Image (tube, rainbow, N blue to C red):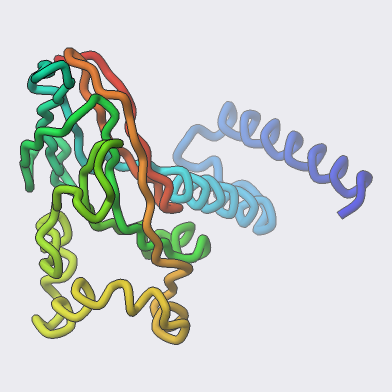
Length: 229
């Protein structure tokens, strides 16, 4: 599309908006769309669908939070005890998993597996990014020696209602074989999955704040800091 086409598109879009306002004034909300041409009605519908698609792409969900229970020095070394909570998919105030960890230092890493679907499936509202919490560890620990969050190979409680429609064997295979599935192009393509990958975020933890973990539908997750309630 060239510059002239862009100008025409912008002019037509503005004209359509003006037409909508005028029609609303004359006919009221109930009958306003019925007085448009089929092309104008189509553009209004497409615009709503476009907004919904963009909303699906940028939508974020809370998936849990962490808070410091205590920080103390032992033989001159700082230790942080934190509470980690995973929240319900439909109700962020409901806990589905709760753990406490004590880690040397105050910089803590949170490790998860992300399942990212193709953008078109997200825009159509068919899928959202999934995740599986793996480990928590400090900067003085190796990832291998980190503390487990979810039980390895077990289906996360957060997705129980989604996977309840599948057979037990299928559900077990998905979560136990997730890394193998990540390297199976045919499986990924057939299920609309763009990638399965690991992602780690870390924060310097302090008392009196809450670290809320969020994930968007494109698979980006991060901790947001808010004051303690």
